[in-house]
Image (cartoon, rainbow, N blue to C red):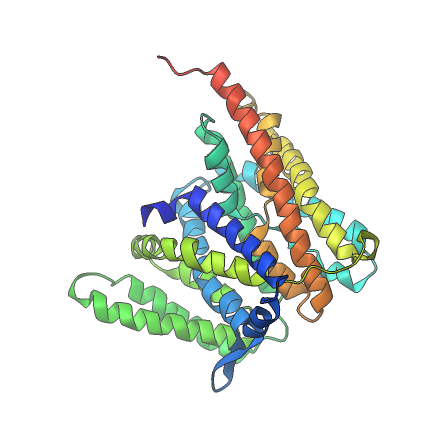
Length: 382
């Protein structure tokens, strides 16, 4: 299991699954896979397509892990004080605002402008994986800054999903979800000793019920995973995420990437592609680099003068390139934003994959160059 916990392995599996999904969708078995993806399974009123079971159900587990990591960073990690959090927070905001402005420059005045959240996300697992592959010898402060920025980026993405992709929520069911959520959080404080198993079973039932209530209320179901991760006691939450992480890296995220990338490449000329395609394609790599670099530079002025150069401009440019790897959350936002338009959703998926691929190449080159320079300047003693 240790190899599946590796950031390099997680990134490789995610990329491979997305490439396989895109490839198979455009072969003879593509129609059969798409039919399977759109086939409905379930019971009673809880009937979802296979694709939605993956994006609304399994992906909630990934967001649970994200929430636990976010809580750890806010309580005991790199974001546990205002002074620590303000610099990566300003960089994260820059990495959201600039891609949005670039996207809107392509789509302003059209219904496609609703897709503005798509290029705002950073795939933390993929970004850290690229850093691990190419960044041998880089100082740990770059990884810490990237981690803090990506965690804050995830928080912004969670808020966007909760606020902008929720329509007419059922407040009664949300109220019941709050009750089951509170019970889940309280029980997690007693998850020890001989009562561990029965309490664990009860917590699992409460988690499933919370997920169902959130889903049925009209709020995107991944928010249930976020809420469960935030209310669970830190120590048992850490143990649960340790168990779930290999499943998330090795199955859930690759399966989602495969499903999301199951799109038929439009047989059109570049001039016929929708403005949303070009907006995402440019906003992910360019917007993230410009926004994170500018935000990181401005944020450095919040630090004491002696610490302002600890993350140089070259480091911020590199982190900006890593931030342009949207993948998981960008693909999810693309599905949500263009749920009623298959053509635009397909083009949006291609744009996310291409924009992320450009960012991967740019990040790989810049991380390698920065690492070589740092190794020359700080050689290890023989």
